[in-house]
Image 1 (cartoon, rainbow, N blue to C red):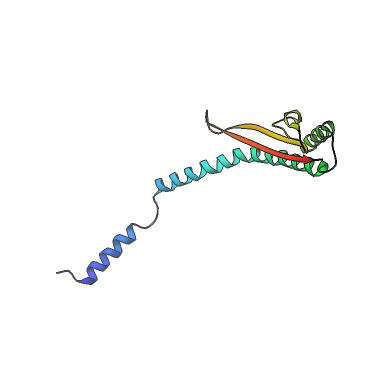
Image 2: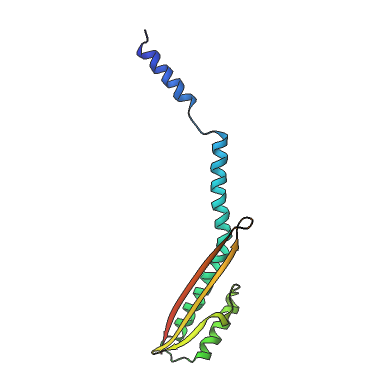
Length: 134
């Protein structure tokens, strides 16, 4: 006849043997986390470049908003700011400046491709539009 003390000690021993993670489980977890870290490292420069472009667009908007600018003045400012910020993925001529009823609309739309592993990669699409009022 089993007593509750022997049943309890067997359950405790079984629980003690099942504690922790196996080496294979740990390798799978480390590999899974490593893939996400590597993806983050590959996408960081893409988003840093976008933040530069976004800063240029916002800076031009702050510079000319309410100042009755010309299209050539806006283009010149974009070009200078792209040079200063060392924007690499797009050119200043890729920024569209179109006249609208109450000013100019400045629009940046582009795709940035980044390799990941082998023939896999990321394609990130960016779109930023601001209005420069007269």
